[in-house]
Length: 408
Ligand SMILES: Nc1nc2c(ncn2[C@@H]2O[C@H](COP(=O)(O)OP(=O)(O)OP(=O)(O)O)[C@@H](O)[C@H]2O)c(=O)[nH]1
Ligand SMILES: [Mg+2]
Image 1: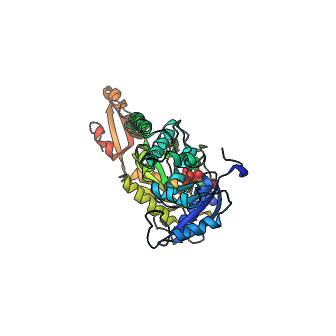
Image 2 (image 1 turned 90 degrees about the vertical axis):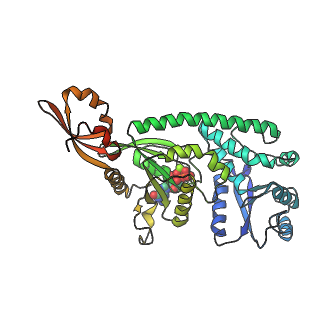
Image 3 (image 1 turned 180 degrees about the horizontal axis):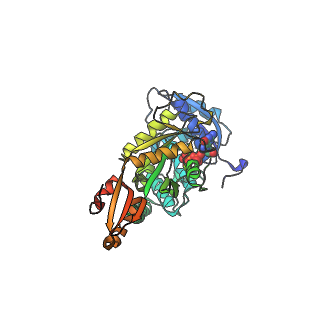
């Protein structure tokens, strides 16, 4: 659904300069522009000594930019968050050019990539929540924006719609999503009851989570060199040593991910994170420390305390392995290197929480035992005169269910 070159919206970045990570934020903005199907047209850097409340950056710089861009058809991306009035004032200072901020761009990528019904509702909710406070007396300004980034959405609602109707739509979406959440909770509860071992893939966007899911499960879900290729959580089963595992892919994280997006996706993420083990995936060929830091912070915000295995993906071209955290596992999901090691580590994690037991089940109780069978991985079964003797691996959290039958 990407536009042809000539139809692409050209985007010029204003990159505020402060701290020491503005360069990587600028590079990331270029990837975001690419992922939104637009074309990157250049960057102007601006040192921020003091934020100008009206226009964020100073009037002198804006005048310079206006001159530089004269006659060119460009949209301005301010790579930070702007208040509604700052957006309008910058636009006015640049001859009424369209101005968007980082959040608007990210929301646009999400709007393009949402596939499932729930994903579309979540993105629409996040867009409306972001734009709602920005709509005050802004009708004229918004209609001047025309099409393109910031005006697309999966829903019918046009941003010009008056605030009351938007408020109603927000309420409706919140109710609808809450009911979908209830259904999902039922599914999660059933999974827990069925004793499925569940693992979720989390991590920075574009680190190879979906590729790893495909590699581990033999699935064929969408993976691409774009930010936020995955929005919907997808689950697939796979087997290690005759034991079944459920692996779930999730939306990628990003530094300074808009707060609205996190809250809109909160409930989907929450059920994905309600699992036994996380695989935190990093790109070993990139700034993995920043990716890991962002991921751990996001997990903390989501109050997730599930144990994890740290997976360094894209490690096929890594020259030195000693610069990485000692506990991590190196893989290359694309060519399959290291996958057996990862599987062993996963199996080892689960076996630590298991006990080997010997059970003696009287024939009269076989029916009753049948209900517990799903909690036990049976290794050996012998039929004696009065009992069935069973060697089994049972997760410690289910051991109490077997107390009537345990001999060892
Ligand atoms: N060199 C290399 N590239 C890889 C490897 N694994 C994945 N990739 C590439 O990295 C890009 C991103 O892969 P995805 O699996 O879509 O990444 P993701 O983490 O699911 O990304 P989002 O869903 O967008 O957050 C794709 O172009 C993959 O082909 C690897 O082991 N080595
Ligand atoms: Mg993905």
